[in-house]
Image (tube, rainbow, N blue to C red):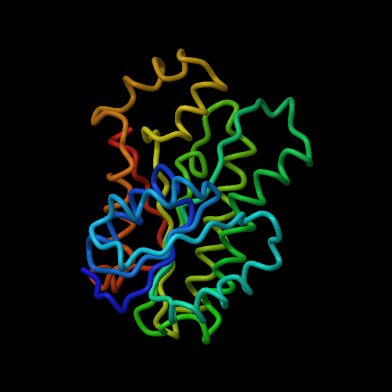
Length: 248
């Protein structure tokens, strides 16, 4: 699917969807820059990936300085070469009723769910940092961006803003042959889902389970779609937000 010269940045690679995407892209032949906040978890990727010589751990806190993200992307390009793709999988869930809405909480959600991915995309789309024709961006949004459950208003709003920004970006860079897509997963069995259950209670899963005729997803289900959208096999797909919800 990829060649060793294809450099792909995967954020959120220390767990869940990001981890699965980094491992899959590495197995499919790409050189992967695996970024995340958990240094120890990133380092274990080298022990289990298919090609350790093509996987580079880059611990980084994406929200430490949002304005510096384009500079960070430029630094990665200098050290590893121009980027062929980026899968932005880093994220965090928020579950609280709209009666508890506050600008402070919304700002936290928007920082990691919207501002960070779009600022990283700004760096990626700098002509100096990507390979040009055939380069691709994939953002992990959420089903909540389309149809939020109760208590998902802040999270859904942040992800919806990401989808809108990504769609606009896809139109702006299409003339350069760069593709931009989003994936909006439903419930996927990851640490983020565990955090949702912690916040909302086991009853939440019991209510949701009957709505998923194919069952809850796993991280690899999303990773396969992300890798496809990054590859040349998806050369005619851009500006899309693909719901991935197990038939919900």
